[in-house]
Amino acid sequence: MGSTCLIALAISYGGLFNPDGFLAGMELSATGPAGLNETRGQYGGFFFLAAIYIGLGALGYVRPTSVLGFLLVLYGGVLFGRIWHLAAVGFGSFATYPFAMQAIHFVDFCGLLLSAIALRQGSNTRA
Image (cartoon, rainbow, N blue to C red):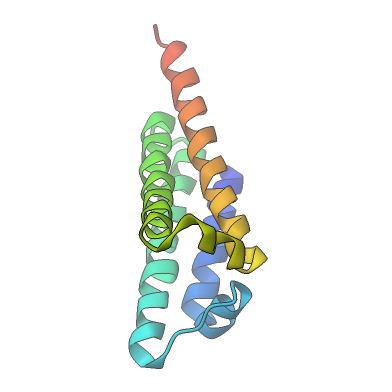
């Protein structure tokens, strides 16, 4: 959980303090102040609070199963939205995505899978 907390903090830092640079790293851009506000809100604010929650779990203040459930929702929701978009525009468009965006799909899938496995393992030890 500690490494997930650090990743969330890094995402948050980029989204809050350098939204243009953060988006450029994914070969995206925001147009106007509304786009920057959305970047700060979605990537900056959300991931900052996610990092705090995950960090509290890593320190033992929040039950690990709660954090893993939260991570399932986080990764599952993001992945669902990405797949929904691909289904709407055609899955062939994925090949035109920059490498960074293709990699993010893989990272989200891995996060979802690992969270589900860890949550399952945790629930098996309680039986």
